[in-house]
Length: 198
Length: 432
Ligand code: SF4
Image (cartoon, rainbow over all chains, first blue to last red; front, side, top):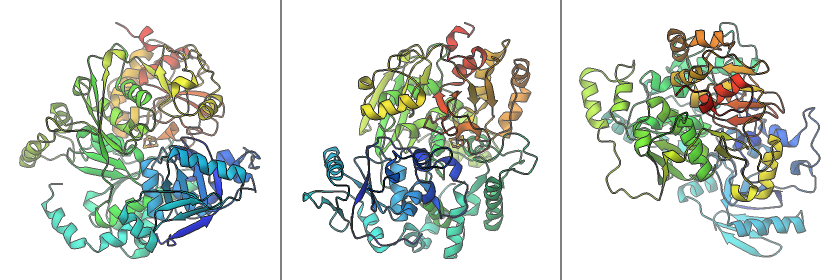
């Protein structure tokens, strides 16, 4: 899928200090029936965000207008559970471009990178500092610098560097995906396939 | 379920499926489990099922849709028809693809963009995972099944304990386990965070595969077999992590919380937050959702629903186990039970082996194959606040329906709950 290039993102952030946020919470299975990729943002965190009668739950962070921005900051082990890419689509469609946590589930991380969301893994201590900064000022700005692989809390100047696979980084900064890359290798793939027993 | 968007992606780029003969499709997630001969009621589900059919036809992929005698849950029908073989790399847009690792295949779930990638190139780019070996040695006690073994391991490692790893299951417990049991174990490797689980193929594996429809025959079989026998971990191989457990420490398991790592021996008490690890706030939230308290016993708790099925425990052995307890007993009056085979082939076996009669005599009804209450995408939903003992693989909030409370367990524990109406130690109901 074509997505916007990611270089440096400066934004306030939405804090969600909950651990083990699984993909069924991010997007419940009953919303997976679409045959297109659009519109999932409305159902992001559906059951945490809305009551049974579709009225917003006042105590849920996405319903609190003081928190806005393109960055979601979440507790440890974010995105565990199913392989549904819809979880990443919902996050993207809602307007987030970056998720920060101290630990991500593998499939979620891959899915995010494939569709143009940057998952940033920070140390538990730095994660706490981000939560503290947002608590002090809901409008606290974070700068996520992908080329420099650095995340900074602008109010305090505290920063930490993060890891990312260099190939994925190249794709994200250019808005490419893996399919573009693999299409260029068709001959090699055919040669290999001819030798395979399956 | 995730494929329509992947096909749409191909179309938008003007690409084809590179190797349609290496690609299979089956309908499972949103199929109904009653009246499958009628048109699917839910328009969105019907639309997705139709899309799979149309796309498969368009790109030349064999498709086992609703009503096809080979239809069933992808992780049940793949092995059952000899599609799953040792040494293969198998991917599917479903995280429980790890199931196929039971055959010594590298198998893992992928997202839609990756499905599109595989369809268009038969390749997938992955960061190299770390390696973990999990050994369980000794002999399992009475009433302790493969599901208990894997729930036990997850309770020890936590739901994120193997994130970033591929895990190998080794030791006598797995050597002595049937293929059905190995599939149950590898199925749940994703529930400890692992990308996949793998078990070295052996005589049990080869005997299971031999003669299945898509399995190699004649000379091709001999050649394949010679290769498969080489698929063993080298002596002295180094793992990034290794854990060893004792079979005698494992009892029938049940979960009490909202992730599969929150499991315990059925006779135990719910641990205190401090002993369970993780943050106290997350732990409290989880118990509150479940309506449980620290240090409570699970035995004797009232159950409303029982679900046996899914790609974890929807194979013939699971129904045999369920029937071994139900036989000669009656379903508890207040229990609603959903008994859902993983495939039509399993459904047929249930009938042929006389298990259906046992179920019917005990007051149970057999449904038609599909994922069913495992993820509640069809009509099989557990109502809010109700307790379900489920043989599936996830007890997340709302997984089996908004507000539903899931207790993951083995088919034996499910059967014991179905006949007594409460959480019951199955060992009390098993003949010696
Ligand atoms: S049975 Fe459940 S876990 Fe298995 S494939 Fe179906 S929905 Fe997924």
